[in-house]
Length: 209
Image: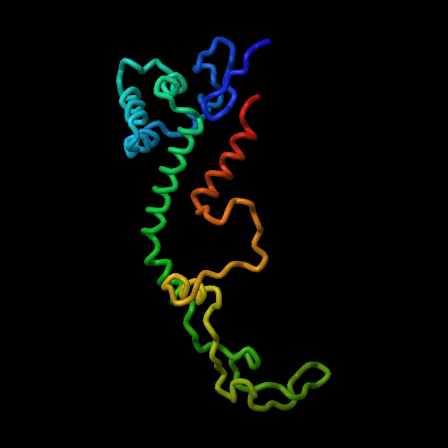
């Protein structure tokens, strides 16, 4: 019976001749992830094995050696590479997102303002019809009881924008939707943990048998 080979995280790897170069999942990762950006992720890591992998990737001596073989040489599994790349991308994305935060929070604050708007009852005319002919022509009008003839009324700012603004400045606590989906991730897990767990489930479902 042929022995099933697995990496240190339990993922099946090709068992033909034990060669890491036959690992389709590793090859797919290397073909999908931009090489220069992955090198940046390696450079940002403080772990020696990632620094060793980076040096090997930049060394002409290893130019014909596959990504999978290099990873095996430095004890880096597919999950290790995936976790490093995801963490790097999440960090990069958050930095880029925060660059837009001042403008976004300003827009949210402006959307929260109460403004004067056309009266919804009289459409800003200040008068409403109290009688019409069979053709729908107004026979008599009176002062709009809502705006009292002003044609304008106070329009309260967008509630969702107000909530976001007050939450961002710490005036009120973050609200949890009443219909939030309950998931068994654990109360002490933060967003990055949840993302990592979700990605792991997806990845394991795609791994080749």
